[in-house]
Image 1: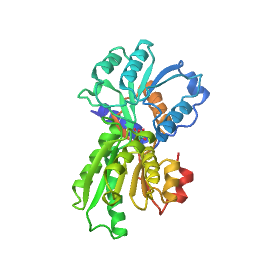
Image 2 (image 1 turned 30 degrees about the horizontal axis):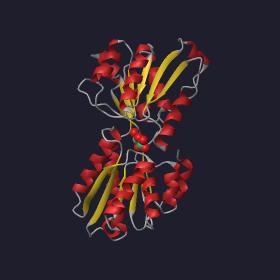
Image 3 (image 1 turned 90 degrees about the vertical axis):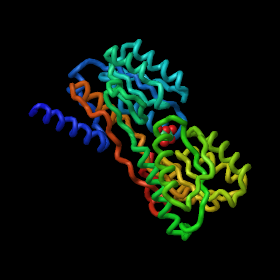
Image 4 (image 1 turned 120 degrees about the horizontal axis):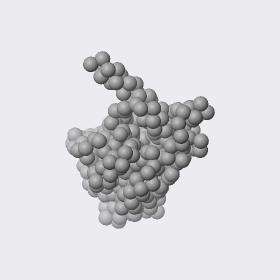
Length: 333
Ligand code: AHR
């Protein structure tokens, strides 16, 4: 009983450390000498967005310590089949740890069972998998996407009150991320719930822009061709990049983004926060991409024999609008 309690306390402390940012300091020489070089296989989603680039950079930086890590990076180019092949490949290479940011939540049971049976711990980062079998991964760390979606609608409702538009029906155009990915599933659920609970918000159109500028632009162009401007009140894009694509489309149609159409996005990268300060985006919701050091800390904990909780959420919760954007640009990724 006592041992169980101690174990629970250890898990709790580790999870608090991870959630708080786990911004581990550089690893000291003595720490590095404790064990051999660890072979780490990181299977990344792709390079679809500013968020992803910052995320990749944070991993490369965190594991840039040759005496301790042999860090092997794979860019899945947003291709789920390619991503699964990469995981098989790392299993074949007998790496010490696999770090996986799954493109989609589905279809992981078989392959991750192989990793588990080969004795390779799988750390999930950013995105989750859908499974009934928690033994397929040792731990996951990432953002609370459902909360982000709900927060976006809360911000919108307050904003509409502040500009006196809360009593009229307003059409919402909802641009989703990669279908089946955790941020899409969570944010869509939060946004849909928030809209359903507000009788003045009408979901007019919903389509994926795949988290990219190009697809965001394409989808917005299509909407602008199919609907008159008077019917498009609000755009909610599930990341900054799609919002940038949509802004390009609006500008090409002679529409003033942020003025003629209210725009909300997610991630809150530097460029997007600057766009808020410039009045092009009305609000961007924070999603922190700097997971590299957090995950490195997880590897070190696991290597020291710690047992971690299955899920730890990164502390997000900020949003950037005209009231704080100009001051915050400097602090963003
Ligand atoms: O999984 C995180 C999401 O993926 C980010 O919001 C998006 O920009 C990225 O591509």
